[in-house]
Length: 384
Ligand SMILES: Cc1cc2nc3c(=O)[nH]c(=O)nc-3n(C[C@H](O)[C@H](O)[C@H](O)COP(=O)(O)OP(=O)(O)OC[C@H]3O[C@@H](n4cnc5c(N)ncnc54)[C@H](O)[C@@H]3O)c2cc1C
Image 1: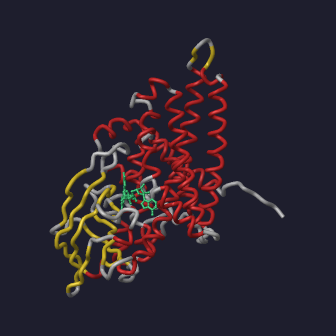
Image 2: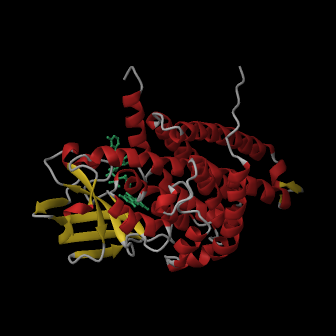
Image 3: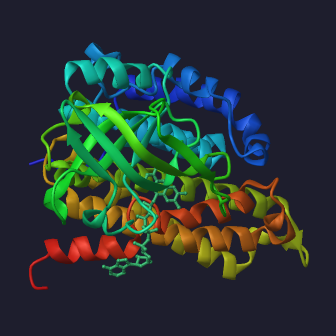
């Protein structure tokens, strides 16, 4: 019996990696600081990423995708760290891996044509609207209502912390169509040019600065009933399924980001000396980085294990939650030490590790907090 633990990256995956790295280093990385300062990045970036096939890489050709497996998404999330801008990466991953997969899975042909295909082509910007001012972790308690009136839904409520929110052309929107609790939740495709919709506020954040995050209001917004995604009142199940892809790309990006930070710290520590020797030669730091490299390797294989299950459509909620929890918590320690190792330069925002320090903080909060990951895992492990 053979046992192999090599990730199944074929020559085609590596060619995609090569092209993507070139694009990201040439078109995104040089603007990392400028876009953070602007608090936004050009719309054309969505189009550019679509043109190199990155947005639709794992979608069927019928909606403009390339028909690739999930390992292409792994490559995408790994290579995006070379943009040195977590905000841009988050916006692009919301567009292609968080707001849109559910349309591909349960949307009608019309919804795919009107929303999914233009998003994968970079023509329309997509957002995912689940969280609300009074319901983030507690999704089953969301309050935005969609009341059926004839052949329309009338939507009232608010959504909070919505990535791409200030300029999204449509939102994959979670609404309450039924009674209280998870059984009354549905999903809709919501075009933002509808009367009564407004961007109430662009939120000023700690990190991920180039990504716009918004508070949105819905006041008697009318959309056709055919914009319902899947079955009425079955939305909670689909949101939970959709969260799996969101959490997995977060874990993949965290692992790639940690590796990049430690590699860079070691380079820095061999170039800079104190007390007559390179910083990297001080045993205290050697031990610290060896510990981190060991933990990163563990995080990588836990995450790849979850990717493998996900790619094969097998149950992966426990493994994905563990990967998100482990990588999200670990990056807090890794980024702290890498920043400390850079001394004063680690406090200057032109240094990537300084920006990573504030950006990485999101990884225990967004897409489900570390505490929520623990609750999910506890429910899936016998004995609790
Ligand atoms: C930059 C950014 C981008 C985001 N983008 C999006 C987006 O595009 N779309 C979207 O829908 N949402 C988005 N979010 C929202 C995000 O998913 C939520 O912030 C997150 O799920 C946490 O919800 P909350 O903020 O309401 O925290 P709360 O649910 O209020 O939690 C507050 C604290 O209580 C803890 N807590 C809650 N319940 C439990 C429990 N049962 N046991 C133990 N502790 C618990 C939490 O872990 C946390 O520490 C984004 C958030 C940020 C910051």
